[in-house]
Image (cartoon, rainbow, N blue to C red; front, side, top):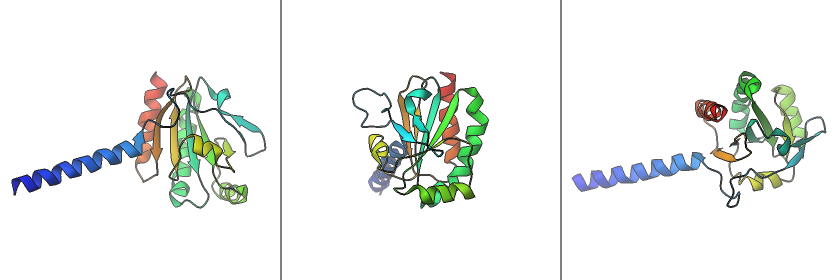
Length: 171
């Protein structure tokens, strides 16, 4: 009986560890360097948004889609975070992954945000960052290095985002 409960405990601990590693882990696929892959995407007003121009700031890339329920829940919270920390050397960039940005524009008219939005219609940037879930959030430090990747969203995750942002801002 004792061996069975120990075995169950070990399995549960292993599953929890794997879950935590998946939810918040350094991004993979960025080569041997931890440098964030460079990109330029069209913005909401047609302007080019380039990651390289954000170097020196803590950057939070939030990959989202108009059809994603958790993205819809998360978006107003992302805007609150952006407004609170943007004067401290932090910026957020919403990266929409819809192939047709019409739905994204419609969503943004219903849930406006103050942070910049870029459109990854071909999903090339999403592939560079190994985005496999919606939403996915990437944290990039002031030097331009990917520090964490958070896949998915559930209520309360914003506390983890804030902890990551505060830690990166202190560096």
